[in-house]
Length: 221
Image (cartoon, rainbow, N blue to C red):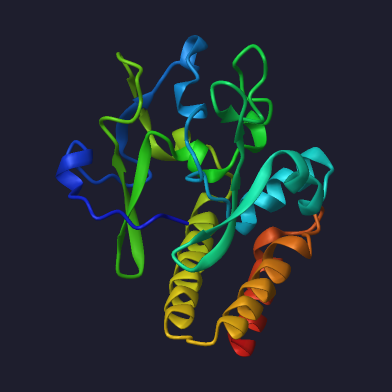
């Protein structure tokens, strides 16, 4: 998922677009003690169903349980979606340890895996760009985009990202055109239940589960 940003690509990137096999200057060398990107992010680290499947499976907790400590719900362009919670004096991610390390690094959300890269959507596809002003670390090394993102079955994952992006965009339009607030609320609650609260089977292929639910949701909506 992405937030809509009314900015020029040239203003926030190096002006290049990258594919999975391209080299990009994103490697921060294990961050070496820096965790600035884990603090002060507000509601911007939005989670998609794959993020939740990965987190609930790795931590052995339900979505409801994660909402008690680590996640929260906010409206994103009319659609209610979950995001990582920030807390404490420095307003940091609740998954950040006292030593300043990510306690869920192996199952961290897609936006965290992507940073400092972003996605540039073009029709029914997208490419990646390097955000030049977001990461405070200097002397970053070049690394292949797909190695940096570090996600299994990455082509299937890209297909899922596009399908989810298109679904949410369609839902945003549907809710914008919906004058009845009660119906809009019911639509949001249905989507939250279908893709988040209902839970995912950790021992089964996520993408098969998602495609089945997506088809059902499209038919109903």
